[in-house]
Every structure is written in structure tokens, then in C-alpha cells.
Image 1 (cartoon, rainbow, N blue to C red):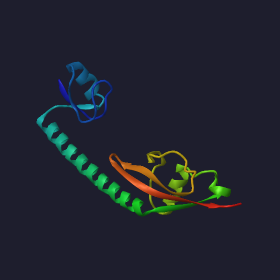
Image 2 (cartoon, rainbow, N blue to C red):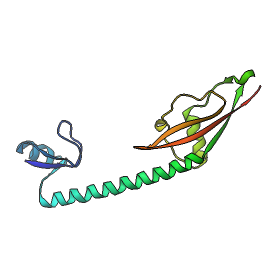
Image 3 (cartoon, rainbow, N blue to C red):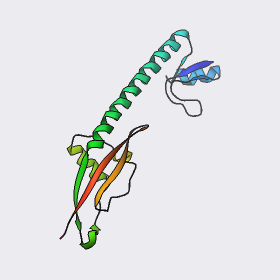
Length: 149
């Protein structure tokens, strides 16, 4: 029996795939639990439409991520940290602080999406990369200035 999966099923397949399963497993488990539908002309048409919609949504998300990346390129975040003589920095700037500063500028970024996760502990400008979407990477300029005690 060939079925179209509506959800991911372990050891069977992912959502939207057409898989071959035994008749009993298909009827009594997958279809009964609303995890799949039998393959037919109508269900294949619906699957095709869903894939087109998903592709359009994906393209829209990529475009939105590219726009955010352009905004991030122009963004410079300023942080003041305590520093001693010869430019030695006491403390550092973490990804959490970067995300909070971006939120103040109305830019939403998940801190887990920041690629350069090490804390910034050197004076001057540092470029921090952020993965906004799969394949779309933006760069933030983080500028640290020192203030002596």
C-alpha cells in the first residue's frame, strides 16, 4: 500500500513523502492515527499544491532574511567596557548583550543563531556573523570602547 505521510514517522519517512508500507500497517496504524492518507489522484494534487505553497513561503522567508541582513550590515552596536592601561579589557560582551542591544533597535535575532559565539573582549570593531536563515548570513559590527576606572 502506498501512502502520503502527513507527519514525520520514525523509521518510515518524513512529512510529504510517498512511501510503500504493508496494508495492515497503513490502514490500522498510519491512517487510523491520521499520520498518513492513501495515495490517490486527489491526494497527489493536494500534495503538489502544499509543496508549491511551502516553496513560496520559503522564498518569502529568504527574502525577509536578506532584507534583515542588509539592515544588519549598516548597524553598529556600541558597548562601553572597563579597561585598564594598555587597552586591557576587564570583562567582555556576550551574545546575550548583543541580542538585547539589537532588540532596542527593533531587530529580532535569536542568540543561538549567532555563529561567532565567543565573548568579545578586545577594544575596537569586531564583526559578528549571524545566521538569519539557512544560507543567509548577516554581519553585525560591534564596537567596544574602553573607559578607565
